[in-house]
Length: 229
Ligand code: CA
Image (cartoon, rainbow, N blue to C red):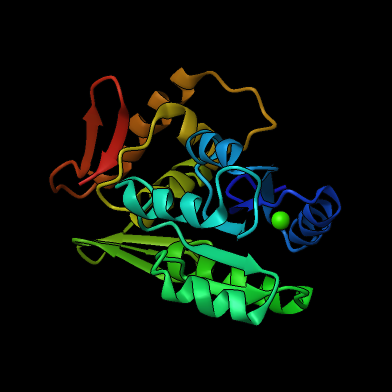
């Protein structure tokens, strides 16, 4: 499995529906985190740093609308795309009217193919590097299709790990990533890697980025992790 697989958080209280979603999303190459209620969803948001959320409206206790509102209120998760699932089209009209900030709405029973297409559309918007696009930050350009990186027009030599680290940073300039989050995203969760390994590769990435001069664009945030810019 690719280490930088995008993660989808599925929030659905019906176990059978949750498993159908998990199965199909995994078949499409996503990593899936699944929650059976809104409270659990909020915990997984922090733990899993998902790229897209598929959120059922009708959940016990904390409703999908409330979960969506919390996602869109917190500064760390505001940009996270949320696709709301609802049982009837009138309900979808109602939740649209509620201004929850959801990015898309799908009516149950949905076509899995359509839902997958919508998840991918949201991902293209939120994680362009995973969708194979060109990213720019100041004088740094990263092409995730050709795996080439240039700075001020000069090609940089990056190892595969440094390339994945840089694309993670370039997808969300300014965002502070903890070492654990970088491990999950760059190395994958199934491998045990010491968090100090992150520091070693950050050092290599800094060296590669400075190969032809220019200021160090990476910021070490004491007690928190690293950020670009
Ligand atoms: Ca439900």
